Image (cartoon, rainbow, N blue to C red; front, top):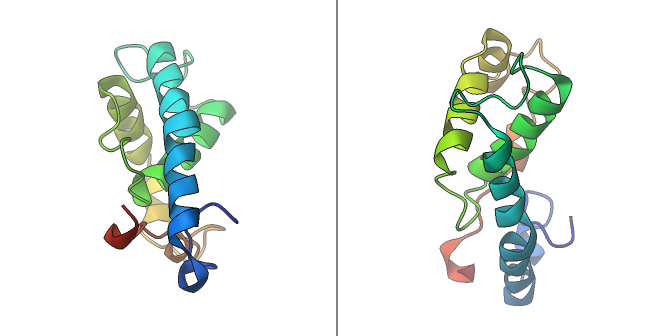
Length: 120
């Protein structure tokens, strides 16, 4: 959490931390997304089912990046956009993202916040 901008450290965030975050985006996040873009088929699937455990975990990581509006990764490349839209459309995912209190993750989205423009 030291490098990430989030609800836990928003008040203590500095320009130096923002610079480190932007470097992390360039060095790690962009190549990460581009790697998966190359693994996706035209339908936005990485495996034959398109809903493997790994794909759901990947969706969660990318959803946090998308929700946090990480620079240079929004919008995602075309096949990853299809991947995200496909998983976003699953009934179970819709339930979590709508804030359904019966789900384990419904109340955690407020922790993911966008890096303020003053740090860009």
